[in-house]
Image (cartoon, rainbow, N blue to C red):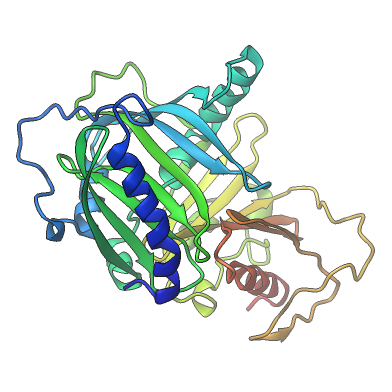
Length: 374
């Protein structure tokens, strides 16, 4: 259930959303949702809405949408990007295509359009697979999150059901979702931090539950190989620095810091331009996620810093003792946390949502592991 603090922050936001979308005429804010099906609605009562349903429909429904993706910028202002997204709805072999259309509220310029189009071509998977709500591990999501129902309303002339997916931990974001009654697909999603601040949202303007044949699907710029375990990904690295004991690549001891998170993604990416490999490990509590990336053979960005610039410590394990001083660079804002350090010719990066304060402890624990080996 929502904690009193979380409820006091989220309910006014949700009330405003409900009031706004209920009164908004078609063409102002929302376009009609087009449901090309004669099947019975996926949602007929609140009890139909479960995490199981959300995972099933988001993986197994072919659809095409035009939507606005709004990002929170470092200055706490929002920028909205209009995009087209198509998904094949095949959970065994998921494919998608995502295209930049325009920036909300601005006149298009060739230079800006080219830059945004390049961003989408390079980072399409990041935006689609990691830029919104998703049930990544159903068993874990049931344990670590609760669902709160807020009823039915009209949005753009179509019925939707509102729910809030709230974490049991107080240092994670909640999700406000409006679900299309016919398909149960989210047609609005907002990520809210523990203080009630809007971190980002996806606002679907048009939804079609049929998709025309795709000439092509989005393909990654980097070569990607996926593995069932972190150790298998580590062994598969072909860079010389990745072979043998003491190569510097780690299988992080995440369970010692955040036991509710477990590995759900293990892959190795390779840049075809220069052969640079990166081991990417993704961890989730069922919905939230963070990543540990390790790139061997990368130049040390801290090489010019004076000795003793920084020493990582952790309350749980005491000071980290090593044969030399070590620096951890960090970037933290309301929507993003990134930690970076270099050890044994391996660049290590830890990245996750800004509200996840304990990610700092993860970075310190991995740094300790890099120094001590345990």
